[in-house]
Image (cartoon, rainbow, N blue to C red; front, side, top):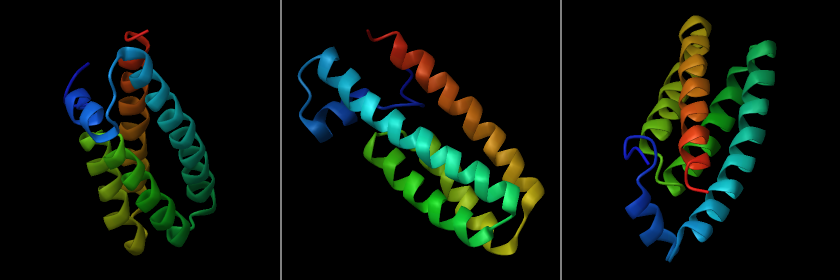
Length: 113
């Protein structure tokens, strides 16, 4: 898997994973959580609720860090920085990049199984 998307050695060490099956299980939990967080972010964007974007972006950043997805965590960090100022154009652009990154992560994870 592309280390820029998910650092598998770090993920394996973090969770003491011993094989691809365990890795797939951990990533499945991460993706389920992430999909719920992204749905919340999209709803907050529609409402232009900066506080909610900030809150969810912070949670998503933590989830990404725990899953050794540093690039994705950095994108959520950008949302955290943009939200308080209500920079909606940049927030939407960052969300597009996040969506593309998550799709690439799903494709790579699918290749493990």
